[in-house]
Image (cartoon, rainbow, N blue to C red):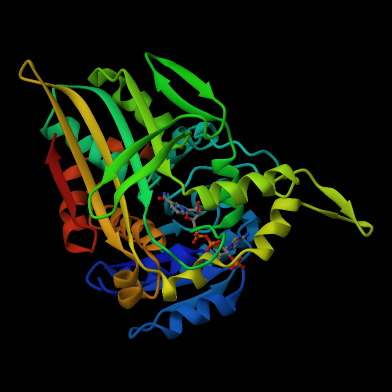
Length: 393
Ligand code: NDP
């Protein structure tokens, strides 16, 4: 029986609230706070169970500290934007509350994401006797847990991992992103990067692809991208014999054409430009023009398929395992008024919180999700709407 404070009332935040509300034996009290209280009110109105709502600008530590002191939660679930990670972690340290998130810290002025600054808080969390769980979404999140599961149950050595992320859905718009457009476009316009034999290999954005046949979706062009879980997984799985880890995401030609045009005209830049006497950041303006990812949910059809392909050795024999989840946009809309990209992030966020609040996962310090026992988390995925399939290839 615990009180949880969820910060961020976007697509993912809505799912986290719905799923926490559906598990009252763990989440006995729920507070949702965000920059605009109307967004919290909209989510509150969808629920059959009462929750408290509040307003906070999580760019300011003092505001988050006041919010935590007012509501006194056991755990803060951060599903605002990656820009707020360090502020919310600092507020948790000051108030003595556990922390978790789904995306690693990004500096607003630099399109670069890494765990360095969050990992640097390890000793402070440890000294305070607090747990910070990083990256409890789908990727990072479930994909990391699949890796921990493969290592624990199926391989003596894992040599290669390919994380395969496909959204085979159709929202009917010419161009839209499935989660926060600013964060999404910053991520996919970076150079591609993967880890091989202890080194990072950098390639131009979208320059390497393969076709992968995704179960329940079909063959799709899948491009090598840099994704944040590569940083923690390469470090944590190197002792298990890891030689290479890559991340692939599918993109259609229509999407890539729009993206190329927007890049060519400078609309994806985060460098401010002067417009009619005031500074404007083109990517933030573009975000204002694109559909709110939450608004795509109602008419979304099709499925997502996200998983991991492992090659390695067990008892002296080589083997190849594919673990994946398939999620249907229309089904998730029916259940929690959200599309599958928000759903596949919000459910594992709730499950991660459940692991902490039920004591299944404990520790003092800052940890990535693959550092914990995967079994209770995988068990809950099956029960909470994200069943997985294991397929030997
Ligand atoms: P949205 O943009 O839909 O939601 C973000 C919410 O945070 C909005 O309600 C926004 O408020 C609020 N917010 C933004 N800034 C502040 C602030 N300073 N103070 C308080 N609230 C603030 O994004 P998503 O829901 O799609 O994504 C949420 C998080 O999930 C992101 O960090 C994203 O990177 C992560 N993610 C992780 C994935 C994974 O698999 N690990 C996959 C997809 C997303 P307002 O409504 O006023 O703008």
